[in-house]
Length: 140
Length: 174
Image 1: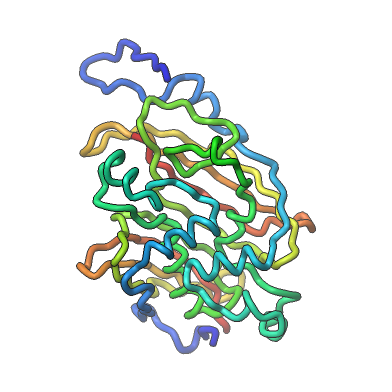
Image 2: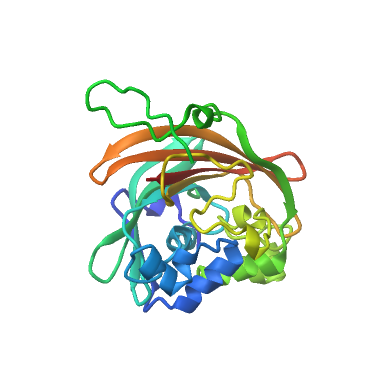
């Protein structure tokens, strides 16, 4: 299932639905498994009354982790070289997220073909919540 | 929290970064911290992010994919190193659990972004050591006022001495 340099091209996109109707339970699962207990992500009265948000919202790294699957599923295991990005809008319970990775360049690094991707995760309103870049090794 | 307002010329905004905090740039904020990658923890993380790749769950699948055992999801390694804390010690504001707190003239630190370099696979049973340094502190002026961009760089090294990953985490403090 790995990508081969001979069958990918610049501009090619990979898209996945990351989550539909994000549940508060998933935020709690993420808090527990990451050890990030920031109450903005789990405590509704704190998030709304103290911090002034419309509700609790997802950990940025939950969005980044969910989005990473677009890359690891496309590239195959163990081929992701770098991955980074910025959180541009909050993700709230009930949101639907879609991740799109687009190949922006294909280069040869130390004899190995490497694809660079731009990544954009958007919600049901088309608002970008995460934007990033990644590089992954292709099979020759 | 105190801050030296200084005597900035003209309308330059006051510094949010006290000198004793700026002096920490380049120094170690956390670690070295060592932990062993546990299967159940890695699997709970994979389930939380909805990544159900068999190489995380099925040893035979991992071996047939060429690994010596179960694999940890790409960004899990940083959570394997998070130390449990009793609730009395849990902070109410930011994400970062640095052993050395950063004194800044701000209300809240939010997570702005993160960059990873993946250099080698992380397997269940690996003993990973992490060390975090304060890479930079930059005061910026945004549409909602002054903020501080905090960059922390963490290096993860396995029991063989191989660096398996590096992260640069961006905090936005305002």
